[in-house]
Amino acid sequence: MSITKSLLAKHIPFCLYHYPKSHQVGLAVQENYLPHNKSLSFLIVPFHHSSTTNTQKLFVVNNEALNNHYLQFIESCTPLSYNETAYLPQETTKEQYVQSFQTYTELMHSGKINKAILSRVIHKKIPENFDIITYYQTLKNAYPNAFVYLSAHPQYGIWMGASPELLLKKNNQQISIVALAGTQKLHDAEKYTWRTKEQEEHRMVVNYIEDVFKKNHIELIEKGAMKTVIAGQVAHLKTEFIFKDNPTVSIEKLLHNLHPTPAVGGLPKKESIDCIQQFEGYDRAYYTGYIGMTDFDKQADFYVNLRCMQITKNTIAIYVGGGITASSNAEEEWTETTLKSNTLLKYFYSKKIND
Image (tube, rainbow, N blue to C red; front, side, top):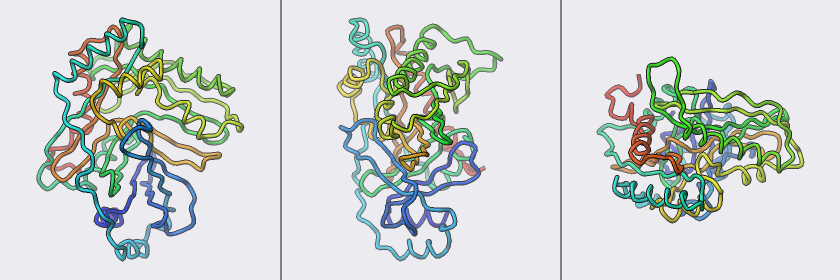
């Protein structure tokens, strides 16, 4: 991790990442710090184009190039100017959350939207002796089935996350995608009972995915049964899809059509996003955007940027949200976001976070 420490010290744009069940940690950097010709691109895309943050385009460093020679090169680089006042949203109070929730449900009862995601920001003081890289390793070891990353940019700050939600994976002329929506807290019972509200929320995402691929004339190969999966401190409903690649549809077009899905935006798409931007109360930046690598042709592997946090000198901002429908309950939704925040906070104040 010496290279990562040097990149942080120099404020050089990079992303350290680990894909689910992978045995390797990858590194992507800004083009002019790449030790070889460009290969795979690595994108960090904000939730919406109106964000104060922009898409970061990095490039994957080949594993064999991660050596002492590259470390010496990074250490020789001039540090970049760092924006210590990077945008950090205010913490969302419960009063603000409930007020936004009521506005959301009023729009639903009027028939203007069917579902929209309401998120909030939680501030925590950084504990003494907190080490960013050590904490990244802790999350990577704790959540082997998640996409775990650490990114830093001199203008947009430091971000870290552990996402359970695949947005799109393309490989071997097949496209994999996951619908992940509907949430409950963990319990010890053998089976989870899913209410109509949670099943409807999940079904909206499933139908949306099928509709996007149908409109792009992409053939469905396999659709898995809806099942319960554990992700951090909560359980979700999950449906997996495999489609046959249509080479006439570019990866860029498919990503544009898919994102944001109803799992992070809502339905109808435009109206729900308008609702979020008008009433959620802050700029999501990279939260609920997407992140991953691609060659823009035959290969892509992107995850939705969930369960993430922004790290400053003294404070972290944790971003969490949930799907609101006409049958949602404000207190339950608030509790759900608290449970989701524990995915990142569970190890935060541990004295032995690298165990």
